[in-house]
Length: 395
Image (cartoon, rainbow, N blue to C red; front, side):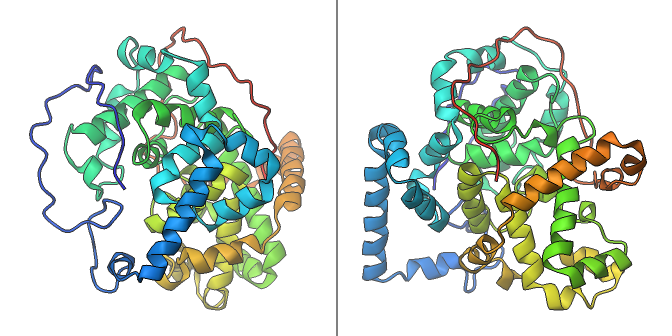
């Protein structure tokens, strides 16, 4: 996989990066510095049989036929065979087509085409009150990936431009540190402008419900999601839910980053990509499903642990539980859409009731992932993009 980026070279973060240093250590097929070379998936990938390589080739050809030239056949295919599309996405999008498919399923490609010149205006002609905060945080985003390792290099400048542009575009959200992992992941598969419009599509709700509440003051959507997840654990795994209550464990101690970064902060990259394939097509419910699957995999161990061991265990799951081919089928077994709707209504009702609101999960949100929960931008008169797609309910 190679990052496909346009070096605009016109922002205030325009420094001479110098020559690109050669990686001092081997990198995996995604561009991350290898931590352990023995028995890694990349080593195993080199040993693919001829039959497996032919199967991969057939799979890519099926996807190309489904997409058409530059996505020209995509919408027609989705209307004709939605279940085929869903099944193939759940099995994983071919890496060579991932960037284009992500733009198609998120609605960001349409936003880009309907708003020519907007990104360039945001990057070149506008300033943001968050610029220094963004520069400070750039090196913390995927620091082990070669695309972002060079100080003031192409990767860091591209990430700066996307985050700065969004902080100007959306004054209510501005910039929050966790946004860097979302934008950084997208930049590994598409250009700056494409990544920006995909961030817009997610936060403003081009297809699924808007997600800007993940980053607004008070993290309101994070609070709602944690409330829903806590109740889902109690419903699907009552023994574990009771144990968490006894040990005074709540989801904000381990799960905030799951939602803020859609698992991209600290989980294995092959799993992250598979989750993002599904997340962009089916919505936020996959984050709940994966969270429940992780709990189910470790259930028997977690119910035995005291508080001081529970939190580290919930932040560092065993490697053998993080295999996407094993974890995702288990995640799909949790049918959560109806439950999420019911819990959302309950959460909203509680927030309207001041008695319930005082005791809600929202007071215990874990802010450790973020240095500052919200940093607002200056006021700018930027034309908002045009939305013509019909939104779908999440879940």
